[in-house]
Image (cartoon, rainbow, N blue to C red; front, side, top):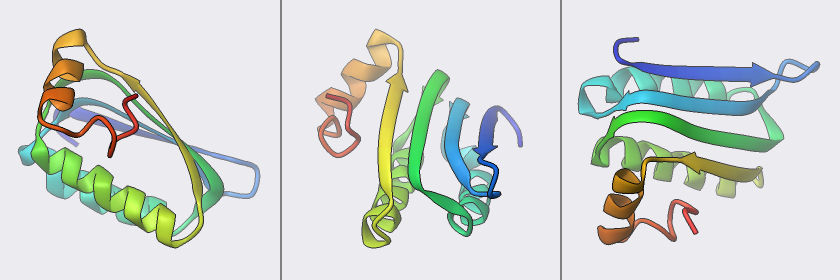
Length: 106
């Protein structure tokens, strides 16, 4: 992992119930983030909290990974809740490019 942190919190059954992303959520880290998400999806709890905070930078590669993650959870009937803790600048950027609804920013 270089430049980002992916913290995974498990419950007593060994299922991931919280996934926290921070740091550089950009193309150079996309492959590593994707590989870690493959591990996460194998053992998800039926209710997941996704926290995105302390973001230094974010780009479309991370957004695509998150949208694929959302689709997987929808297809597998996994409930999820997003907690976005972005700077005003990054939040405005995502809203201006039209991702506020898809990413549950509202």
